[in-house]
Length: 344
Image (cartoon, rainbow, N blue to C red; front, top):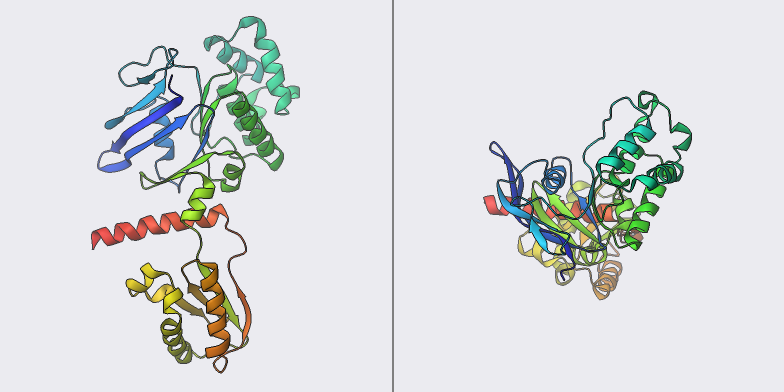
């Protein structure tokens, strides 16, 4: 019995000459929460729509587990698949009431009729909409509609959830409730694929991250593994007094010679002048090094001994945290640089 619930093989989608998704491949196992992240226009929603069968790929395949616990190509056969719940794009509904809407969705999704009312009441209470049960949706705020869209996706208690920006427009308390609910679904063995720009939220709930940029999958792993792989390797050395530009340029040349053994090798080998830079406004040298603790110690020793006549150090530090936002930017920058090299 396969534990894989979704398998993407070389999935591609074009709109005219525009490549929205380019040969994306990865798998999602039962009980995993996978976060899909990337800038606007990266291809996240396109990928989710392909899985939801709202659009068809130009090439490649989407496999989803069926009721016989086998992976099934959904382009060839969409019957007998496990139950799925979808929240794609910003939800829009007819001007009805939450109760009528959720009852209708539960019915067409074949949720047990004798349990529908209890299910609706439970969800409305969970997400603080119970007092709005019979109010018309035209009176709802954007955040309330978003919560209702999430409830529509989960009302029939599916095995697989495909969620596009489920926390968009929600206040802090609502985001916390969505996060807690996603974790409770995982504890029940549910499988979840969601996209989000709220990177700190993804850190709280996701087992792995699929990072997409310009339609290409450029990273797929746990956040911890991605952070180790793309760890920020920067030292900030702030000095007491600002330096004239010409003196700063000469000092950078001297720093490059003295610190070469400890700098980031790829940048040094490429003769990249960005390996050491100086910001006169903040009076700070930015040094890209190889990330080793021993190297950091040696760099400080060299700066305080060989450069004591050039400047006085007021602070010497790395970025305080390895936040996922930093990792996100690094991955996109790396992907962009690799594409530029390919053009050359």
